Amino acid sequence: MTDNSAVTVLGLGPMGRALASAFAAAGHPTTVWNRTPGKAGGLAVTEASTAAEAVAAGPLVVVCVLDYDAVDAILDSAADALKGRTVVNLTADSPDRARRTADWAAARGIDYLDGAIMTPTVTIGGPDAVLLYSGPQHLYDDHAPALAALGGTASHLGEDPGRAAAYDVALLGIFWTAMTGIMHAFALAKAENIAAADLAGFARGITDLLSPSLDDLAANVDSGNHPGTFSNITSAAATLEHIVHVSEQHGIDAGPVEAARAIARRAIADGHGGDDFSRITDTLLSRAKGHLTT
Ligand code: NDP
Picture 1 (cartoon, helix red, strand yellow):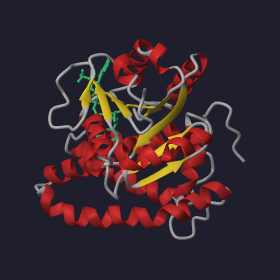
Picture 2: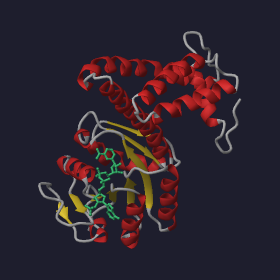
Picture 3: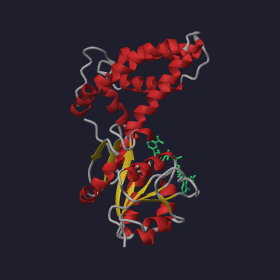
């Protein structure tokens, strides 16, 4: 007899441990498995010796490991035991991989939801956690009460299993390009004998400018109107030119800024120099396969 409130967590990296801990804390009997045994120390869980054994403990199986190669290997090893159960895959990867794993599951009678975790381990189980899900609505509705143990805000983004991963990669693109920009700024500052700590307060002023502009930028992108009333791409390109120049003077890798300059130059060459920077999205999309720009 399986306990309907039981949850299985496959993978006990930092995130898998946080997930297992949150399920256990919310009162779900939690069974775990990890490729390398002995990682369940300090958790109020049962450690199984194989993935298949762990899966047999209950109807809901959460997998969270390094990438989808690892996911596929683990699920494959437990495919028979997974039949009739629901896998919620919280591993980060691409939309394409999510869709392929969903197809693999469907062919084996395994219910499948994909998901993405947008916040660090310490948030899991608390109010600040942000989780995205996609896949069949009825599966999400069935398991949302158990998944609520992970805390915070959970959003079901649609039936396409790749949709959560699509949001994830787009959002992580913001994070990592911004992080690279911040590190480049610190490198420039250091080269000019400015301590990173001295720049940080002013840097915060810059990053604070971004968040309030998101809705206006998105409205421009969705409407296709990019009025360059307050600033335009030609002006932005001139600034990017200065940053590349100073980076090169100091022998600093200007790559992150060169990439931005190249895109701005392309928009200008296409005749959009007078448009708002939001036009850059169209410039990026203009080479996308199958995308029609207006
Ligand atoms: P990792 O991404 O380092 O994943 C470690 C886990 O993957 C371990 O359980 C490891 O097992 C397992 N693993 C790796 N390769 C294989 C394999 N070939 N077969 C079986 N298991 C394998 O750590 P996290 O827990 O931090 O991340 C898990 C997922 O969560 C990732 O997709 C990550 O992007 C996402 N995430 C993590 C966040 C975080 O703050 N940590 C935040 C948001 C999302 P073993 O112990 O045996 O090596």
